[in-house]
Image 1 (cartoon, rainbow, N blue to C red):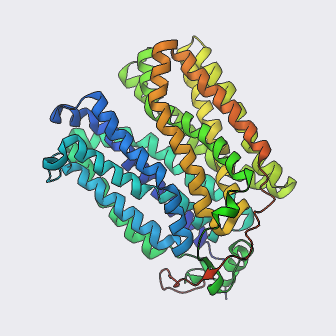
Image 2: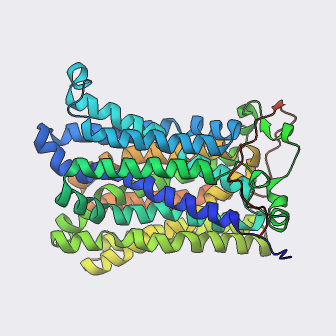
Image 3: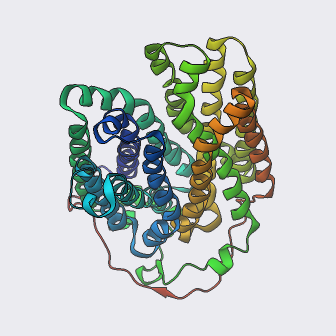
Length: 449
């Protein structure tokens, strides 16, 4: 009889990676479709900006509730429900300018409502990815698993423009939203079928794999697995969480510059053609696809050998510092090709350290990894709502170099917040009331391989 461990946990990680790609396609497709939506409905740049911001606002403010729901009820149902929700409203986007709601609040208001609802759904995504990783992965695998899952957003950012443009050119902009919505609903059903809240509840996990996971999963009695409420009064007393959130906010500010303005910067400032600028604008994201898993693996390896103070904080500190220098030189160099190289590597350096952020939320408060990571990600996205507007303002009044120097300075400052983070000291949560939650099982197949 084969007693080697199964690898179901890595199948779960691969699924979350794919969900991350899908989530980013559904987030960014509106920016591509705007080329068709704006003339069709006579929308101005400012009105389209309101529509863009509606998503980010809904996405940012619902991070904590989305993570708290996953901690309370288990990530399986919450994540599947969230994917179904945002995918359904992604499909509805195709109708947003013509349905009944427009007679009440107008075309712009209708698009704003739909985009906000998509953002609310997607807000439950990243915190529940984190909750799944906290439950499913062994202690030395958190960084690598989170590096793989977070690289999905970078791949989504790289694939969305060419993919969505091809669909829109050949089949129309509405078809792109119908297809994305339909795929998402299928993924939601797959997620509900394949994921279990905890590995011991999944029939594909054999005893050997469970033995590998057990130290991380903390296989306590079922009645003690779900907390009645999140002890914010204890969590928020720890300065670590505030330092982590502040540092992640600087990453959010910088990341949204790349998402929003990098392509136009290359074309309008660096003189690239529309076509070449489009290709070069994907460079930061393809680099990040490779850097994120590498950083997660490196964080785990350093943590095992030297402790989490080095493995998490050392990487979290050094990567923003590298990014700061690379972004500075990318802005300062007169050579457009060197600028692309430096700025792309700057984004890659940020992604090299991103897994350390998410893994640290598990290290600090594993029972509430969803809520705590939601707090951190809310900080990152609230900062991200500022940069798309502030960056062109700075560029217009002080020049694009100055706008990018601000980003470099924020990366430099963000590094030093890691000096106040101690991932090896788990937060003392005390004896909080607990309640049981119904077990949710995955596919009913043989438990051994």
